[in-house]
Amino acid sequence: MNFNKNKLKKFSLNVLLIFALMASSIIFSACDILEKDTRLQVHFIDVDQGDSTLIISPNGRTMLIDAGDNSKGSEVISYLKRKGISKIDILIGTHPDADHIGGLDDVIEAFEIGEFYLPRKSHTTNTFESVLLAAKSKNLSIKEGYADRELDYDENIKLKILSPIKSKDYGSDNNLYSIVVKLDYNQASFLFMGDAEYKNEYDMLASDYSLKSDVVKLGHHGSHSSTSPELLNAVMPSAAIVSCGYKNKYSHPHKEVLDLLETSSIPLYRTDEQGDIIFRTDGKTITANTEPGSYTYRKYK
Image (cartoon, rainbow, N blue to C red; front, side):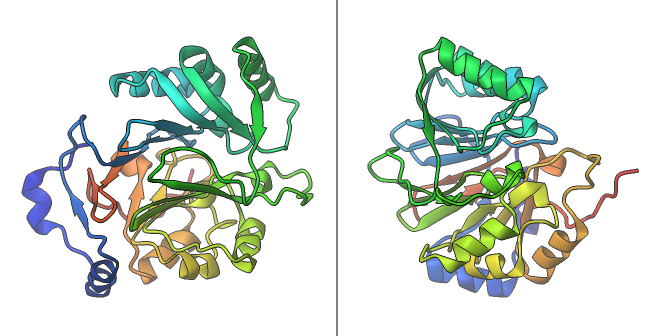
């Protein structure tokens, strides 16, 4: 959704937030997005109740984190092709749940893939098996995504996995194996939480990681099982993203998270209200293609 420039005069931020942004040299503004740009691009693709994030470096290298559920693969492919993408340098499936990896088999078949990362958690679903078969058909090796692993993405960008811990047994919950990625580009930073939950957050808080990030994609679609006050205090984001479907059956994002964001004066961008959400940055200034969304809780009926 393109932001109407006439609304720019109405766009304002909490005074304390403005001071925080000025201190970090990161200023958010709404603007129209041009297809060709030499800035880092982060696209939160609207895949309804699911996740898919496209990242394009200033040098044109690409990374895709998740691809929505089984019915969204073709939409993700179309989105990438409209951006002129023919190769995905890094492909990440955060964890085996269908709303994250369902479209990956289609993506693997449609594009040249450089490196492919999955957590060590396997699954017995047809969806997971389809992803493995697609990778096998392309002779694509699968690398394990685990905490402390740094990814070779772009010479000017630091990309590091913060979770899951390699040696830790998280039991049967797929979400706890979610790959969490931190991206740093000069003074700008992004944190992609997958479906990570409190246990993962506390592990990261207990580590020596720098969690401070300008933009955070909240864990588990804004569920109350994720986004603890402690994590939010450590990340200190200037913007939060929730990827979810409109009036989804899980009632995401949950009221507890919405209230926490609102009381913390953190602007919320949500795909159920704004569709595709795009951030661009030169490493100093971050711009968005739309105004922040609302803190409205929509309970599924």
